[in-house]
Amino acid sequence: MTLDQSFYIGYISKTRGLKGEVQIFFEFEDYMDLEFDVLFVEENKKLIPYFVDELKLQKNSTAYATFEDIDHIDKAQPLLRKKVYLPNEKMPVRDPDDFRYTDLIGYLVIDEHHGELGEITAVQEMPQQFIATVNMDGKELMFPLSDDLILGIDAEEEVIEVELPEGLVDLYRE
Image (cartoon, rainbow, N blue to C red; front, side, top):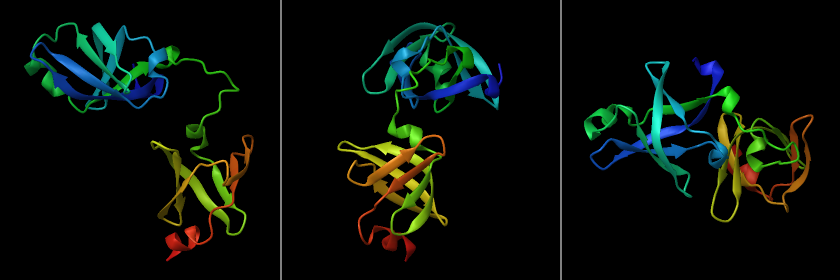
């Protein structure tokens, strides 16, 4: 298994207890829809398979997992902060009408008053709203993804048109 034959789902964040159990933090949005019979852990740019004995999904984007042949904390310790992957054929299929703010990564942002601002490099979920980060001439411009600010989204052209609050863009240009 190589990196291009797999997709990233998260990383091993910590150990739990003395029997080799680890916590996996998911950065893959639909982690509840995944199959976990075998996980691939990146070690020295290679994917090593780990067969799952037990996996308990949590609601906070984490899971507790035990692997075959890892029965002690000392065996689990080297897995900390390692990236976890699954084979591409296990990628869940999403409904084409299921559009999410995270799908906007890579879209070009055009402001009604300032024109082209740059490409969205990240979308973060905050308690009250989603925040887009735009690479604007090497600086990070951040703005809320709010219905009040979004004028239109062109999925085919990968463009989002916005009307940002007065002064926001100027703050980042100084």
